[in-house]
Structure formats: structure tokens, C-alpha cells
Amino acid sequence: MEGRLIYLIGPSGSGKDSLLDAARPRLAERGCRIVRRVITRSAEAVGEAAQGVSPAQFAALEAEGAFALSWNANGLCYGIPRDIDDWLAAGEDVLVNGSRAHLAQTRERYPNLLVLLLTVDQAVLRQRLVARGRESLADIEARLARNARFTEELIAGNGAGLFVLDNSGPLEHTVERLLCCLDHGH
Image 1 (cartoon, one colour):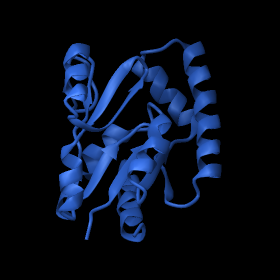
Image 2: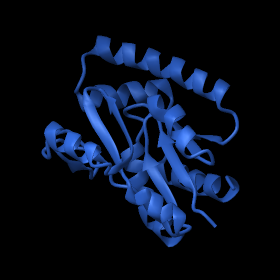
Image 3: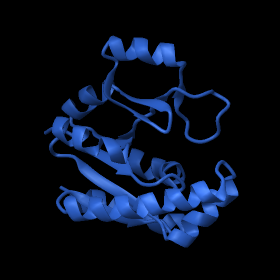
Image 4: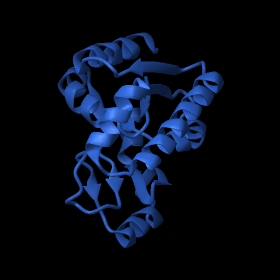
């Protein structure tokens, strides 16, 4: 039986990396792998434990067919290693920190995709983005408006196979909901 591709998406600041870190041991117990992304950004950049590569290295990997999925977002290139196809074929579940904008292409390639949309209350998200200090307040407000629109459209257009996880409260609650979705998402 083929494994499932679980595609975690959500706005910047929704807590995807924190959720994955918190859920990692519980997912490992269930034989679910969390994929390490390849990203073109400096190794010093804080955030997820991704493999940082230069744009030239990324282009070479892409040309060699090293990625099952790849996309550009926010001026960076993201790649999901082709190993996921072997893991899925071996019956393992694989969780990917994906891109909202790349969802349609991913669903074409993996029709049985289970999509987890991580949402967070706008006020909480605003606080997190301000605390992170990477963007101006005007940019944050524009980002929040885009996120709200995108989330509404996504929920409206993807009822089947889409689970919404609210990450406004304690992280342990979100981990429990994530595990519930995996149990009921068959």
C-alpha cells in the first residue's frame, strides 16, 4: 500500500516550523517522515533545518532531476528531494512543508494528497510577524490581507482532502489536532 503525501501549508508566521519540531517524535512513532527541504538561502538564516544551497547549486540539482517538487517563493527556490517517491512507494507517509501557491501542481503529481492548512488568528499572526522584525508594518498589513484572501479561496476551492488546523492556541493542542487529521484523513 502506497504511503500518503501530507502537504503542510500556511502563512509565514503561522508556526509551521514550530509545529513540525513539536510533532517530530510523535510522527516518527507512526512511521511518518518529515522531509528536509532544499532552499537557496544563506546557512546563517534562522528558521527551519533546511539544506541551504546557492542558486547555482539549486539550478544544477534541478537540472539533474533531484527534486520531486520545486517552486519559487519570496525570492527563494525550494526543492523537495526525489527520495519522497521511494518512501511513498515503500508505504511510508511523508510530510512536506509545502507552498500554498504550488498546491495545484503538487495535487496533479500526487492526487491522493492530504492537505493541512495551518491557520492562526490575525491578531496573533500580526504579533508574531512584528516580533520577528523582518518586515515593515505596512508590509505586514499587506501580507495579512493577502493571507486572509488566500485562505478563504483555498478553503472554498479545496473542501475535499483539506484539513484546517488552528495554531492560535498552545502548540501541544495543534500537535494533537495534526495527529487526529492523519488518523481520519485516510
